[in-house]
Length: 244
Ligand code: ZN
Image 1 (cartoon, rainbow, N blue to C red):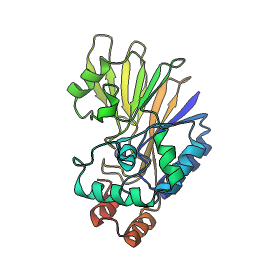
Image 2 (cartoon, rainbow, N blue to C red; image 1 turned 180 degrees about the horizontal axis):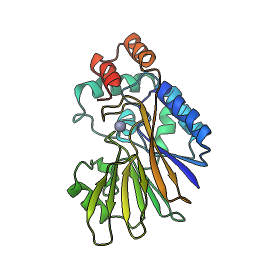
Image 3 (tube, helix red, strand yellow; image 1 turned 90 degrees about the horizontal axis):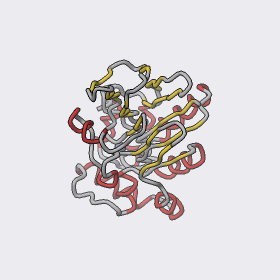
């Protein structure tokens, strides 16, 4: 089975559209979206509709909950807050309702996979995994071979071997080892922060036992022009070109 695991589209329709085109070329059989359909970008309604039409599973992210008023946005940075308040205003009633149906965490027992936006530990609290200590805390909360996450917008592979040792694997292509467990951050489609402005997503091939990040260029300038026309914060517009 070839899976595409995609995340953090953040109302960036141009980036999402390019990624979905690439999934067709890749012959992906199942697509899982790990949350944050909305927030930051200019196209919340078309992104929600496209993901519901094209992904097999859609999860909730903190920005989706923020758009519903289900999560506290006082801890959001001021630009994220402005974008969420704007998103609340423009979301259609039916898309608001669509967001209420998104699940926090889903398991695939057959392939021993876990999918969640933030962390398997307390997914509703939107913790981050930035360090190996953060990862260690989370490895103890799930039994599946791989846990796929998003949320930080930094793609990363963390491996835990049979002796319980953790390591970060830097290559864009990871061969899975028997007896090891993994936490894999699939990166962000709509607002990458690892210094590469191209959309990022991950392909998992269960028969090859491999996971691979892919980077897909899209028309950043066009997305920025849409954001400018809508009066979204310049900080959010500029960061798209930098991938920061
Ligand atoms: Zn996000």
